[in-house]
Image (tube, rainbow, N blue to C red; front, side, top):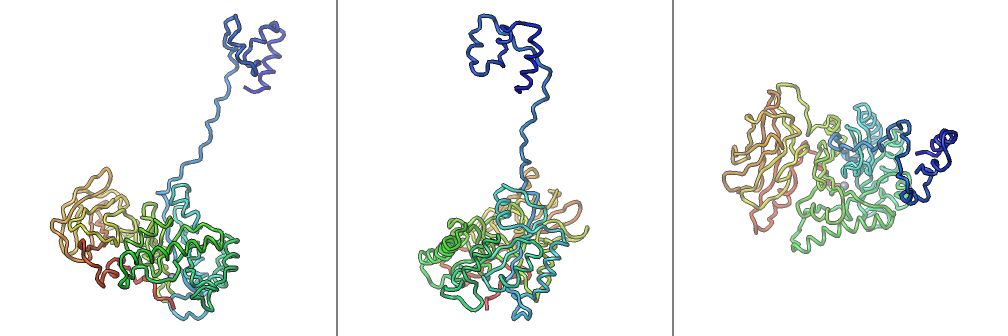
Amino acid sequence: MTRKFAFLLLALALPLSGCEKIKSLPFLKKKKPVEVVQQPVPVAPPPAPAPKPAPKPPEEPPKPDPSKSAVVVLCYHRFEDRPKDSLALKPVDFELQLQSIKDNGFAVVSMSDFLAWRRGEKQIPEKSCLITIDDGYRTGYEVAWPILKKFGYPFTMFVYTNYIKGQPNAGGQSLAWRELEEMRDAGVDIQSHTVSHLDLRSKKGRAPEVYEQWVRDELVNSKRLLEQQLGISVKALAYPFGNHNAEVRRIAMEAGYEVAFSVYGQRLTYHNAPEQLGRYAIESSKPQIFESAMKMAGGGAGADAGSVVSQLAASSMITQPMEGETVTDPRPVIKANLSTLGVIDPGSLEVRLSGVGPIPVKYDPETKIFTGQPPQKLRDPSYTVLVSAKVKGRKTEVRWSFNYGAPGATAAAPAAQTEAPPVPKKQKEKRRP
Ligand SMILES: [Zn+2]
């Protein structure tokens, strides 16, 4: 009750009744409410005041629904007027791409918004784009940044710490700490691309514990150095060459990264596993990579009615085994959530395994999850799961791959290869010059 209202009542009550009565009005006795109880006269409820406007329910901010949004992540390297190789892009082409991002209806989000979205804390636009620049070349600072500023786009630098000026592998194209500080102060996200930019899968005859420690050092020390030098929190990792295996992914999560990126171009939804988020590695000689990013190709609905849609399952589905995962169970459970396909005709669902053929599965239309198992033991080092089903009368196909390594088998030479996800559309990151 407001004070004003109390006085109003008081004014009304005065001519009509004595002060005694007024004193019994409980709202005038704020300070000693106990006395009210002690009144010998039964305390009638205060005269019902005119109905108060219903109190406004406390305004709860609308709960973010992260499943509404999808993100494409672009990965750039260098920016040169005369590109020495396909990882360099002409500034003019870069600018055209930035315009194209806008024209295609994307909102460019920062890494911190991306992470907040991943945590379910923040809504981001339904079509979002994250811009990342790898390695830490000067041209990111000198050429790309001014162009990005023109558009007001946030972006992320994935630097490998050995390449920073003053570090063991620095070169003429290296960025200095003070330049990174300047970028940091202007709101550019700086994240880790490891210490040495070596292929994290390469075991090179290292004993398992030596290998594990080496990977850990690459991931932990780069994070720590960036955090200490720049006073930032490093939450994202870009795997060198986009390469990783199950151990690398595990160690990345243990090292405190919230997300880790490969170069497996895909439309990312809230449900993608954090330890292998794909990026489109833009190359000047392959404009189709940028084009497929703009189409968010690799996931989601897309093709014309009546045609067979082939999608990369990993981009939009939760699968078991995961894309690129190595399993040791010779008869692994194969499972996927088909909700991103839309409403499928359950009778039309068919699941095949490369080298095996159709496998029996159970489909639950409620959860949209199918579960099955190969009828026979696996033998090959890698398998592709092909799922087809009719959605509104149209045949839709999705696929993903995983690897099989018999338990106890020593990781032979091909291990490094088979543990990597298949790289579609030749998006594999090239060797750095
Ligand atoms: Zn790199």
